[in-house]
Amino acid sequence: MGEQAMTRIVPSDQIEDLVGAERDPDVHFARAIDEEDEYGTVYILHSDTCRNSGIDLRSCAYSIALDEGILPDEWEDSFNKPVPVLINKEGRLIPAPRKPWTTI
Image (cartoon, one colour):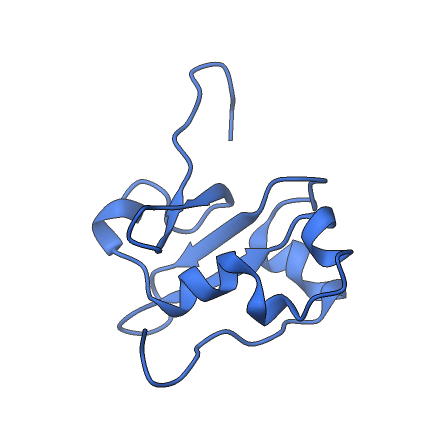
């Protein structure tokens, strides 16, 4: 992991708009913005379960994975839109594979 965590808290009244999704009971969503700077910005919308757990959201496994950085090739078709996310075996945040019957 890098020397400095990149995760910072965004006010809850703003994060759904920034991500472009409504909070889900169990699924974390993210939006990777590719124009803002060289590495882009990624916003995480934590699930209700995570948010209501009482933990500091910066210590959530998804925030920790984001601190590892994203691999742009993994996000190629997912920039600039809300996507459900997973943590890969290397500990990085990646878009969840789409099911053929969903419109996400």
